[in-house]
Image (tube, rainbow, N blue to C red; front, side):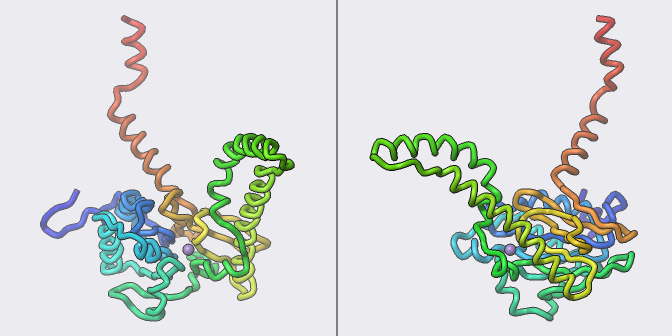
Length: 284
Ligand SMILES: [Mn+2]
């Protein structure tokens, strides 16, 4: 795909063109970061505006242990190149890359660093763009429970059975572990909706039409009492971005799904037509 004469075919016509793209929670510097998928996304898309909505590099994780791959460099190079070629790249640091917050209001190469910005869509709506961690104080909870809660629940029920057999043997009364965790999970689910409400409320108070954030790793686009709440998801598990079409319409793109669809299409093209196969089968 790449030629040596300096021409970059990434910008060829096959790229999906958007007015704006929002991505966040990439967590470069961790093993969980799906840099290859992100690289593929960045190669196959272009936009006038590219918003990096926080937790791009995971400084916390890198303090614990150093994990850096070539693909992580490639992501950064790719973003820098887009900025050089005229994409307006705005970087809004999150809590995991809070070190970058000391550079708010400055330019880093062609990239502008801001704490929050207001984006105006092609159809005139004003959206507040921020990472979202500042609402953690308002909304207290164990977030991880929301993510692992479902999977854990089945295990918990079985664990609960053995746990209480042990308690009974020790002469202790029944204590429902599953009940306890269920309560915790419910709190976690409440956390997500409280977070969404708090962020939407912020946009409402400022008289804006909507908000775009990240932070909770849960892509979403819905109206909350007249305010458009958008969360661009993450590149650790869901592989999602929020995009604005030239008309101003917003959409959530799940890149893994797109990637799989493309592969399926290519595979289908490479395969002989099924009716021919059927005829051959019938003749045999
Ligand atoms: Mn965050």
